[in-house]
Length: 92
Image 1 (cartoon, rainbow, N blue to C red):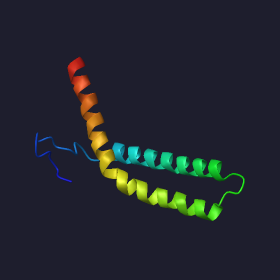
Image 2: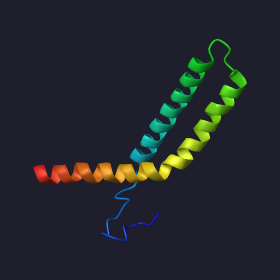
Image 3: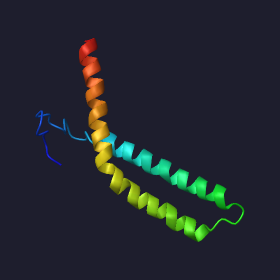
Image 4: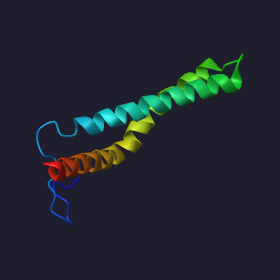
């Protein structure tokens, strides 16, 4: 990732630990997907739940989702931060 936006010059990492919000967002989405896969699979296959297959599916979910969603979570985090900051600047 570039340190600054090539279009507007915005410096992305404002301070040490800036991306903690993006990592938290990524974790929340990953765990939400874990629950969706777990509950949906159990609901569809009940009472004969294929536990081995379900284990592989939820493990794959917990590996693939954070890798795929992390760049998106950074983009969302910058957007949220910029939106809140602009509202605070407007109010102040």
